[in-house]
Length: 415
Length: 93
Ligand code: SF4
Ligand code: SF4
Image 1 (spheres, rainbow over the protein chains, first blue to last red):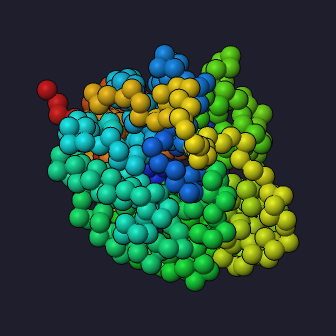
Image 2 (tube, rainbow over the protein chains, first blue to last red):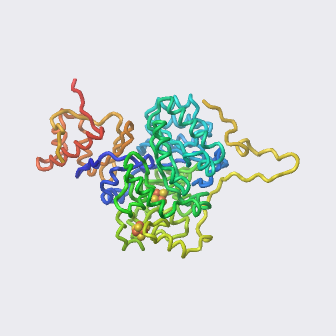
């Protein structure tokens, strides 16, 4: 591009929905702007439920079972009122599988009626042709379908049997309904990096835009990260592929650590945790980033006095994250200006110091650092809603305590 | 940057754009294109917000106290915003 001038920095894709061409145009300057702290987040993720029909091995939020303390419909609407007042432009709704909440469509309608745009992530389970037609009719709703393999074999190994077909059926419905430019979202792993071109072909076939994100050792991802994260050679080929495809492909803030290979990639080139990015979890807890569900990054709750706005503006944790970072061991690195030491969550959950190199540092410093830490001492996620494996029992199974313990879809009717 | 932005025509913030004041200036978000822009000081924000109240962009700039010497920079900013559909020409009735 670049549509920058001295006074206006123009036309970036927003984060999560992906920031800024802007950011790549002037990383330093954008960072300076954000350093002052924003009155409201740009990239707010709101996980509506921990309930999910799937059990993906790398789930960032360790989802599965609904939390009984989940925000009620009325509480969710209060949060939306706050977001409207703060002029949060849109929220990235996720979970769990958000569409299994019986009030999901009601909340989407409430948000858009209150000038808060919605982009929601789904595995596609509820995207019937009727729902797709409704979604296609709204300017203020965007949909992101998760798929982690371009073939059923690669996808289902991570996301579970049948999940590939579910996702493709949903995409076909959206396409058929005339929804153009919905997102096909892929977490990059060792097994699907060879499928980059195939993912692009699937996105093109359904009129979707491809979005590639980084596998981070968050939630259950911590258990599989060591086997699934890309190899050094794969990181390089991913970087080259991203450079070749430029702005056709969204990446959010996923791969700025790869910019140390050369030029910066489109996207947000800094860790925005607590500055640009934050998470509201299903019970209303506010964390610095959706990949940082741990008490160290817990800033408060929307249920506290003052609600979300007070947490965002006044939390001491966020104030400390907004303070200029020193760069630590990365400071002397020639790539620091573009790489900035990488992802805070990736460091934290692999047991690395937050002011040192990313575990996937392209200069190899991460590997050395990982070798020096005791992996078993790395922090564990504080919250886990994974489906419990049901032990084999003889005779009658104990009935579930609540319908939602058995199936998160219980009681759900498609509107 | 070359500019073909017409300062003498009437402009307005696009109806699908939300403007959020921030300590550094403002953020703009366009719901149709799903894109963000940044306004990097309070004066350019004042200009953008008042576009619809003035017969021309030039008048909006003057009312916000933009000097002759500063005008080229403001014109470039408006040009960038027009290119990303954040502001659009309004039809005079
Ligand atoms: S911690 Fe990682 S995922 Fe979270 S905002 Fe920072 S870079 Fe992004
Ligand atoms: S040493 Fe730090 S700044 Fe340099 S490439 Fe590695 S992670 Fe990035």
